[in-house]
Image (cartoon, rainbow, N blue to C red):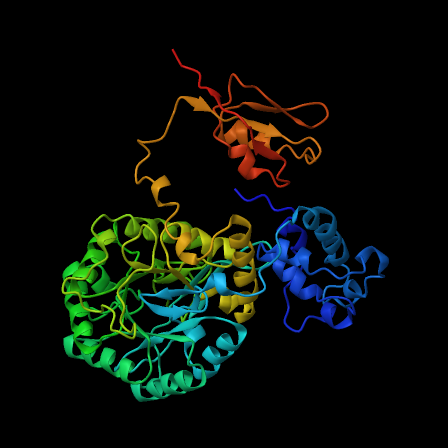
Length: 526
């Protein structure tokens, strides 16, 4: 559990605005960038870039200029960076980004961060802006040879207290540009950004189309092919997630795409299955070099209590759509760990050796993963560098982002890179590959392996507790009645009742409860 030095809830009124007025009036620093770093769990880098003149010497014109004047405690937040975070920093941010260099199946990446196949990577201008900002590549919005006519509106969301998107639903389909138009985009991008990686997401209706599209993408500058076997909004007619649920079709169409290209192939698989392993193994048998996971999860959001139509409503009707955003991260982590831990996939070889490296490295099927046999390009709820790192530790060699970019813009790449870079420097990691899969051995698909003979009690931090009683309430009505509230409103623990479930730690709004430092023997019920 992450306990931030500075709570993100202190920023709840900050809207992370574009061209922020607070930064326009500050002559010493970029308050907006520092606030974004706090929001994206990159407070250590923010503290390292504080102005030389302390903010307590300033009249705080930033708070007056704020679009919500005096509602965001900008000065207080920056002073906390100086007093609470800066003293703990003993490692300098590396001067170069060399530690972040990695690859997708042998194709070099400047860093592990790519736009995922979606609206955020659907035009030349959007990809170019992301490349200029520092993204290593983009999985272009899925290319197909059939016509696409989108609905309006096509998004809905579940939001948090500050309006941020917790869960995001879309009923969007594939690229609505022609194959020829998209090939022209590829050529322009490769000409203007030769070091950036273009992942061509494709979807065919039959073997011939899968083969033809993969060949066209290679001819026009793509570096990697991604096979969309997972779009939940293209199920009619046996497309999208309908394919990903049938391993035989995954193998067949992967083999068809392999016939059209020598480039590395990623099979993008659907989470709308009980297990991803059968489809992943089928993809490797068909000639894929890696797996992309996960695509969005079939969902329904926001039923209107008056019209009875779920969101988004399109002239009085809606449909099951794809769910993404922070809410799906735990599910995505589970599938990535499942694929990474598959003993068949750990061998990392396709059925016929297709995709192996030529002398110039093109088409390398090497996973580039420590302890993981194939390359996994992961996505699903990644907003900040800690999210990305969790996927890497569970087996991902690269990560892709959509929903966070839709909400906050491509500017999030700054905190993704610097946050991960500082972590690597502090921990002594020399490459992304050093971290891939390090958490895999600590995950079991069942709870049978867990030790059950000791208890880890909670401990209460009196200096942080405000006496709200939430811990006592939750323990009484949702736990084991082990916490009471004393006359001073501070909690009291009854160890004869406590089972160490840690519900109290999770519900405390002040992060005033932590796990104890030592375990004790569990009680034996007679």
